[in-house]
Length: 161
Image 1 (tube, rainbow, N blue to C red):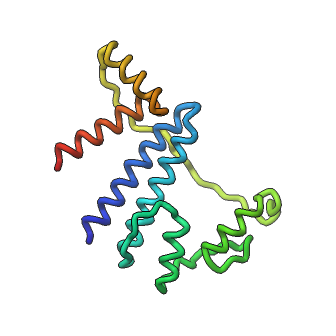
Image 2 (tube, one colour; image 1 turned 45 degrees about the vertical axis):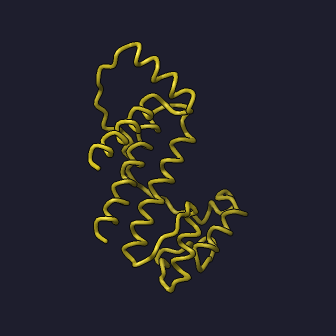
């Protein structure tokens, strides 16, 4: 079981690195958000596996947590004080119909550091090949950097299999 948990953690880390890379580029907010969601999903699944859960193929984070709670397990630490909710489902329902502006006076200052600097290594690419990569990336709605990183990850995974 340890290997599968580590695999989920590693895959989540890959998505998080991709999100940090995308976050440095203007106009790629949707792709950045997607990779953030993917990272959180994979880390959540690693946690659930560690807790003995059998996972379904599902991408709904709320449903995963609700199923976890329905199986008699609890993630109840740090429930929302603003919503007065008793479950993650109730928290989601509350924030689906409310805005933080309505509760601004209830918020508390928070300090934290965010370092979204990507660890980047540059490689020389032939101009003609680069043009093809850029064209392909544009068609698929991602940056050339993202496309190349994904391709390299796939190729390296094939080599390791």
